[in-house]
Image (cartoon, rainbow, N blue to C red; front, side, top):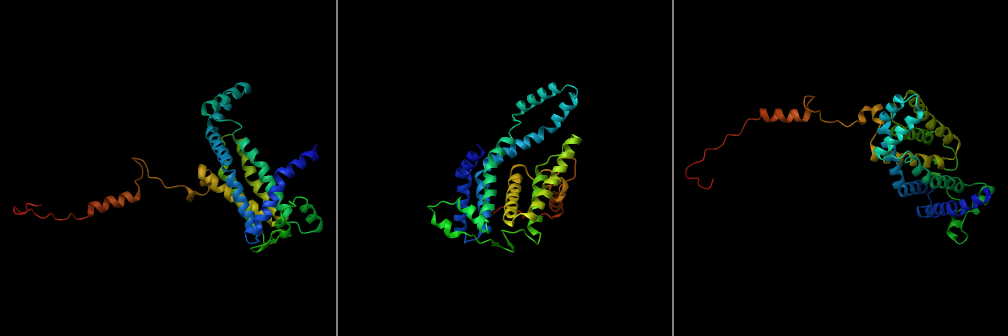
Length: 289
C-alpha cells in the first residue's frame, strides 16, 4: 500500500514538477536560482485564492478572540456549555473553525512536491543522478540535455549550504516577520506564551536547517516567506508587527477635540495671515463687469 501511494504521488505530482523545473531552467538562461524563484512565485500565485481564504478566515478568528476569551471565562466550569456557546458565536459571525486549516492542507501537497523537486534536481553524485533519471520523461529530450543543472547562483552554490550565513539569516528574519504579522495578541496567558514560543522557535529551526541543507532550499524558503509577507499585508496589513515597529503604523488625523493635524494648522494659519487682495471699484461705465 505505501509503495502504491508513493507511485501515485510520483506520477501525478512529483514527476511533472521535476520536469517543469528542468525545462524552465533552460528557458531562464540555464539559471536554476531564477527558476526556483520563478516557479515559487508561479505556484504561490496559482494557490493565492486558497491562501487568501485562509488569511481571511484567520483574521476573522483573531477578531473573535476577545469574545471567545469571555465565553471561556464565563463558563470555565462547564466545558460543554462553553463549546456550545463558541459554536453559536462562530455561526453568528459566519466563521468556520476549519476555515484556516482546509485551504492550508489543500496547498500542502503542492509545496511538498516543489520542495522534493528542488532536492532532486540538485543531484550531483552518480546515485543521485540515477535516482533523478527515474523521474524524467523519456519523450522529452530537452530534459536529459539539461542534466546536470548548473548550480551556481549569485555568491553561493545551490547544491551546498551558504557558508557566508546570509541566506540562513534571511530565512530566519523573513519567517519571523511573516509569523509576527499573523500571530495575534491572545488574552489567555497560556495561549499567548505558546504563540510566543512558536514565533521564535520556527524561524530558529528553519535557520538551523538552512545551515545544513542545500542553498536551493533556503532560496525557496526566503522567496516563499517574502510572498507570504506581501499576501498577508495585502489582506490584513502589518497586523501585530506594527505594535513592535511603531513606524509601520499609519498616521491618522485625530478626531474632534484631539490633536489637530499639523497640515491643517499650517493651512489655516496661512489663510488667516495672508493679506486680502484689494478689490478694484467698479466704474459706472464698466457695464461688462
